Image (cartoon, rainbow, N blue to C red; front, side, top):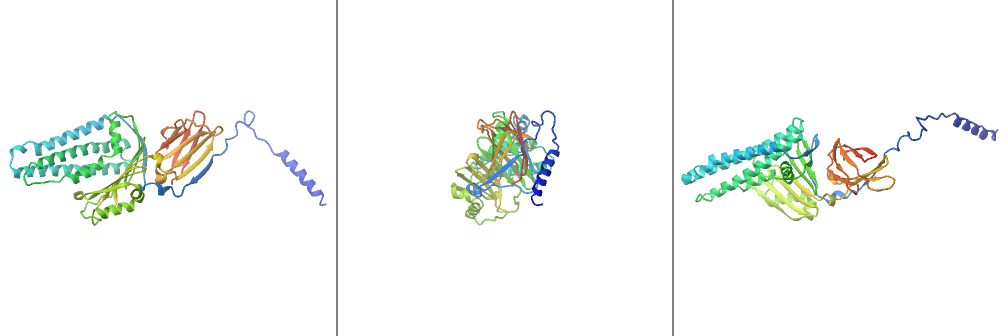
Length: 401
């Protein structure tokens, strides 16, 4: 009885194998089988964030888009109109009769001109704030937002020059002084490296520039990646009421060192400047990976605006994820705090570099170089990544970090 069981099982096994139907598609049924499943492998460096600077981030629901910005004569014309208006205001208030009036009248004229420029400077802040909120709510296009920020860039320069003129006129009034430094420091916030690149592209002096734009109810960020990774972030957290959270300029310096410990530990002589009348503290530093600038709002003690210029290749890699599908190997190297990311594409069989077009959320961000590498600015949240060579493609959903 015991010896009969194995024989019976063997007979049933053979019968069941014979009975399994084979389903084939057109042709020989081999070439139509699905490709191997997408394989993913992730390696994480837990200490990478300790080797680079902290960076501001936005809160709340974030609208994230890329845009190609180039020659924009409409914005240049609007900026010219602003300049003409500023020049006319300055002429009517200060220039027309300055040499013909008494000392007291000169003081009144200088004061009126200064107040006019301060009002205009406040308008820039309000214009920017309204534009960011409109973009975050979907009521304004990304290009329109950039146009307004660039318009502020131009007008801030004109107003700063006008303040220089006021200061020069003040020197001609015996026994009278008027400081314009603080207001000029506030206007400098509109003159960022990202906006300088936008200005060059708008004038056609440089090629179109790709800008990653993010907005939310908390503020906005603008990021470019060319020779360097350049990012500016502004939070809607300015406190209008007077009064400082800091005891003095040293207290502000120490607070900044707590917010950006790596910068202050590795940077070259971080400095702080106090713009007392506008309640701002400007922190600047250079370090091994680039340059850092932040404006602390005295009313809240928080960072209001931050500008980072970083050599993206010097930032440590925090996470490396590898996929293999359709004959392509794709590697995604991510830096800390949602910083610049690197795509590397190679042939799965030969290991040779592949020329491929990379698309993020439907926007073509560029092509890999001769080494199969492309650096790019990733969105803050999850995104769809498509890598397409001449013969194959890989589609990946990258999760939020």
